[in-house]
Image 1 (cartoon, one colour):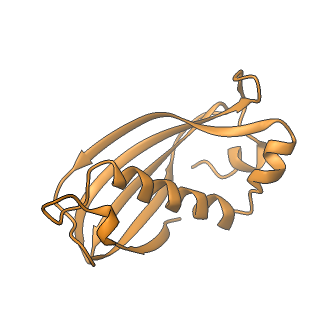
Image 2 (image 1 turned 120 degrees about the horizontal axis):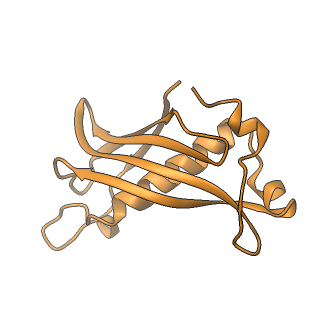
Length: 128
């Protein structure tokens, strides 16, 4: 199932040329993942209270075309095959049907002390 997160490019997201600064795509996809997890019914506050947090382990990113000030974009998030200890999501940033940025993000769970932990059962059940 694809989760869609709409956003608009603001002036603060751009560089001097009016193009989205490359690191801001990571912010865009983080916001989209947070909303995706919330829409899945995962309560990250409760996870933290239970001693677990999500952490990004790896990002593979391809910058394909620029986005500009005031563009309306959509971040599409789709879970990929993972394991009991990690989930992988594909996230694409598009303007209309034009793919601007594509990434695979590997996410793990860890304890408050930084020790890796299994993903919660509710997340593991969602994996394709």
